[in-house]
Image 1 (cartoon, one colour):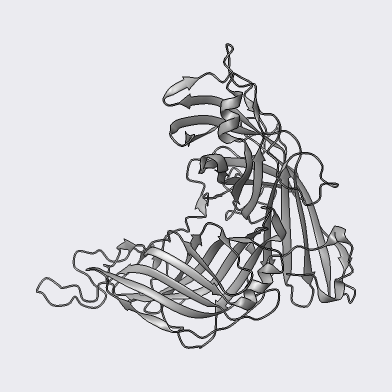
Image 2 (cartoon, rainbow, N blue to C red):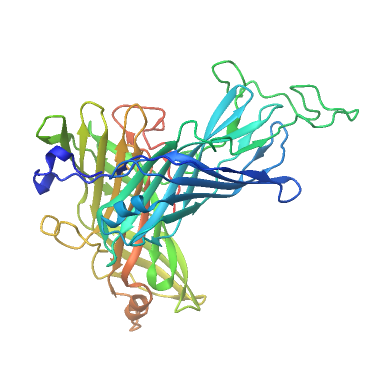
Length: 520
C-alpha cells in the first residue's frame, strides 16, 4: 500500500512500507471435471475473484486444478494431488508492479478451501510456492504455484464438497539489479466475486453412499459395512453434525515433534515483553545450484511497544513504528544448532559440510506501518537485521573426511543490500516481511507476534582458517560457496508470550507450541 493520500509530505524516517493491495472482479467459466483414470477425477476450474492492488480494483482470474479420488469410504483420509493455483494478473495489475521497478516476482499462495458434508463444514488451507518469474514491462502476467495440501476425512456417508474461498497471494519483488523493491513484498488479499458465473464447487467426492452392502445392495444411509461408526470424539458443528476432518496445516506443526529447547531460565530471565519462537527455512547456494536447510532454531525476543510516530494531516490515521531486539539461542550460545548440507561441488564432486550460523552482533527487528482509525485497516513491514558468521565444523569430499580445524569460518558476516546504510552500517543479513490487517479478519503476512515468512538475499564472504597440518581448504570452500545472489526464505512460527500463558501458543513449560515447516 502506498502512503495515505493526505500524508505524502511525511518525513522519510516514518515512511510506511506496506504489503496491502487492492481489489478486483472478473467473470470466468468452470471447466467440468473429467475422469482421467480409474478411481480419480481431474478438476480444472477458472474462478472470478475480488482482490486488492495499490491502484484500486482490477480484474483477475484464478484457476485451480487438482486430482481428486472419484469416491472414498467413511473414515478414509485422502489428499487431492497435483494441486496447482494459477493467478492471471491483467495488464493494469502488472502496471502496479512495474511502477515499483519490479523485474522479478516470487510467488506463494494460500487458498482457503471449504469442505462440507451434509450440513457440517470444515476448512483447509492449500499452500503453493513458485520460483521467481520475470515481470513483463507491459501486458498480463501469469503466476502459477504448486504444493501439497492437507488430507480430508469424511465422517460418514454423504458427498464431500470442496469450494474455493479467500486467497492470499504473497509476492516477493526484485529489481533488475537483484535488490529488493520498496516495498520488497506485497500481499494480494482476494475473495470470490459474489454470485458471478463460475463460482460453483471445485469438486465433489462421494463418501460411502454407493458402497455395496453384504447382499450387494447399497448400504443404509449413515452406515458402511466394515467401517466403524464415527468416533464419539469426532468434532461437530453448531448443529451437532459430525464435521469432515481436515488434517493439520503442514505449515503449523505443534511441539510434539522434535525441537531444540526454547525457553527462558535463570540464565535468561524473562520480562513482560519476552517472546520466544522457532525459525527455520532454506537458503539457496547460488554457485552450487542447490539449497541448504536452515535448521529449526530458537530465537528469544524482547518486543518493543508499537508507537504512533506521526498522525496523518487530517488525523484520520497514523504512522506506526516498533523496535525490538533478540538473539538466537542454542545450548547457551547465540547460534543455530549444527546442520548438514550435501552438494555436488563443481557439478560432480559430492561434498557434505556440517555448519552453524553464529550471531556476532545485535539482532534487531524494526517495523514501520500505518493504520486508519475509522476502519482499523493496518499495514506493517518488518525488517530483521542480524550479523551471522557461517562456521564449518566438519567437511567430507567424495566420501573422504577433511580436517577443517577449529577456526574454519567466513571472513565476516553474511551481508545483504541495506536500504538504509547510514542508519545501519556494517555487514549484516537483512530479511523483510510485511502484513495487512482488516478487522475482523485475521492479519495476513508476517508479524513478529504471529510469525510468517521473511525473505532476503545474501552474499557469502570468503572463508578463512580452514584446514590443518599445512592443508589450506580456504580456497576450496571459497570457490565452492562464497559469492552473491543467495536467496533466503525464513519461516517464523507463532511466538509464545511467556508472561501470559496461552495454551494455543505455549507449551506448559513456556516453549513455543507452533513449530514452523521450511518453505522454498
